[in-house]
Image 1 (cartoon, rainbow, N blue to C red):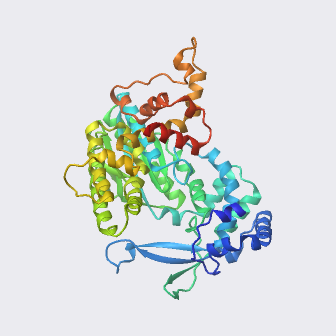
Image 2: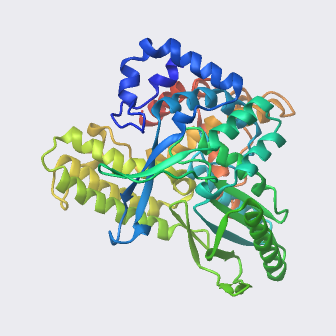
Image 3: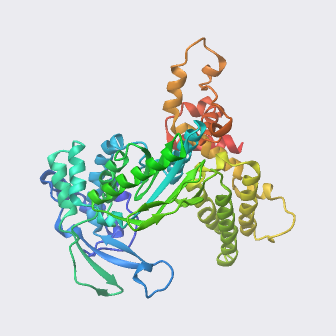
Length: 490
């Protein structure tokens, strides 16, 4: 319990009970004994305290017209003491849930990112194209899925997974009889009780949403499905264009059936699909006609029908140059190291989020374009002119900023280390005499021609063979990350 309290952010915001995280952290030892008694009683009796199920909803402006409610994002602030209870239960629940969730579910899971989800999609498409098949990608938009998921679906799925009665009772108590009020400044609306949804602003809700969407990954036998939170994509393939289009229609119908059964709202007008290796015909469902696209945006990255990354490179470069201008303007009174913090947040953070999907398979010219755009941020940090000759490589090294090639190698080697159990098993199962490569823990080099050579998994396998034995044998992820960074920079 004390560990759960330590992990709270030291925020002064509070829910209706007026108890903030900062207050809890300050008096954690004084409240430890009674709070532990409440938590143990909650788990034992399968009841979540009603007073901790109350929350405030604050609308946060996003963009566009301030007079339109659609341009506001609701942020829910529940009881902070309730979050401690949720975190205590979740710490044990997630240990078992992570062993059950399939590999193609990526949202709300430690160690999995948007980059991993994109790699699963693009590698599957390239593998199917290497086999001569025609491929289609289908992306469907579910409106407010997190807020509309049915409670019976959550508890029913938990029961199917073998969760015991006490945990089922606790989960049902956690979900039901919640009370929310809209708060703007000092004005508070009358409360209402939502009877659907996984619950906004709560620690345990993302895991319950994963459980509720688990069946969607096995619903259609004709597609390879990838889920990241409420975003999903299906990869469908056929030996001929006609066969592929037929499977696309079946997949679309099956997905609609699942959304209806789950009580979710599917926005067909925002559904997209894209052919790879052929030009598909439009699909009609009811009064809606879905036309094929030449590119699709998924998880912040643009996927193209030729499996190239030109549009993604252009978007990244434009975003980096815009961020460099922001550093010059908003950080004009900062010192060099404070401007570097802005650089890390505005340049490296978004890049690392999904770069594993495209940096390892980009050509030299594309990486060079991104490097030039990144250099604009380096110039902004050092407060030197935007144009003109400067030794930017030496400047990057002085500031401790990696190059694009170093970032790429870091991503590849870290991805290889995460899959070390699979690679070590391959080495162990190799037949034949002992060789120097086997002694160094190297696997057989994958095929690096055609579509197979453009797969991220191919780059990761090659990256594993470049890892020193010291890193291959390291069990601690933090130490492995430091060793990989030191190995690349030196």
